[in-house]
Amino acid sequence: MGTWGTGIFDNDDAGDVREEFRDLIAAGKSADEATAGLVESYGAADVDLEDHNFWPALAATQHSPGHVGTGVIERAITIIDDPAELERWDPSDARRRRAALKKLRSRLQMKPRSPSGCEPAAAWTRRWRRASTSCSTPAPGCCCFVSWA
Image (tube, one colour):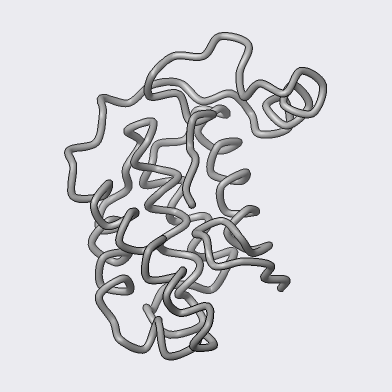
């Protein structure tokens, strides 16, 4: 796995989780079905240090369009509040990671929107690269609007 920054999606696994979740929702899966499939695929059934990228990324991805799986936000907040999360970072990066987690925690404490549609991540990525926009029909709550520091 590659990590290039302290943001919630600044590593390969988190980005992959976001894309795969969008694809599963666009294919008609429920948030709980998509979550179960991702948990199995990533081996993230338990919350341990190896899952500290998975759960916050999944919670951030689910919260914005309102497709929230059972227990996902709670697991993410458990990780955000765990001192071990910051201890795994270099001191110079821990401050920026703390800020990203604080921003995410604040967002996750807000009530999620009513579920809205998600287009497949591949279509979103093609459009973003071509037109520098995140969606051809942007609307508040669209999963294409997920943007975390």
